[in-house]
Image (tube, rainbow over all chains, first blue to last red):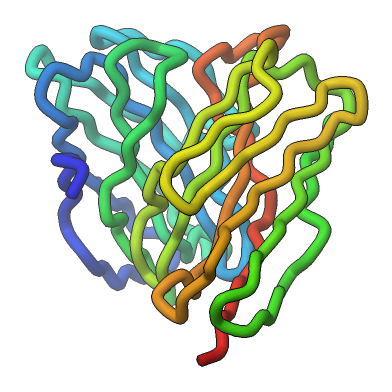
Amino acid sequence: ETGVTQSPTHLIKTRGQQVTLRCSSQSGHNTVSWYQQALGQGPQFIFQYYREEENGRGNFPPRFSGLQFPNYSSELNVNALELDDSALYLCASSFQIADTQYFGPGTRLTVL
Amino acid sequence: SQKIEQNSEALNIQEGKTATLTCNYTNYSPAYLQWYRQDPGRGPVFLLLIRENEKEKRKERLKVTFDTTLKQSLFHITASQPADSATYLCALIDAGGTSYGKLTFGQGTILTVHP
């Protein structure tokens, strides 16, 4: 158990809808990173937040956005869902920016 | 272009043998490299971290080596057990990257240990 929690566990949406995924970081961690993992692939970096500021972004379009709150929990928002957005979304927290990242169990998003 | 590759999609071994997984990278200057274990439908679990100035790291039955000249890391599980069956992911943080905290993952190797 890493202490990183994510909600919901599973989610089914239809194309064009919007979704919000949530993550609570491990106690004492101020950095949260989000990853998308398609079936059979390694996780792909979406973005990272450090003390409520975005600290880097991967090759994802602007319809992927995020927030980090003062308690260091975080949200990932995806607008205008597409079929290819179906994946396991992983949140990871770390003590500092480049420290070891500890992952939550993930949210399985299915877009129909 | 930058690339990180795990050279086996799947590896099958007999219980008690040593499993060796390979991770190769190109066009990175990694600050360090990590290995994770992932079970189906679950998040990756951190196993070991090795820094660019370290040659080898051990933890119980696990051993990682890091050769920055060959641009390769090897991950060994000795005395393997069926419970070691999982997908193993290597990931690195690029010291020269614009997103310093970004982990870049390989595609994973599915290890199956047969009784």
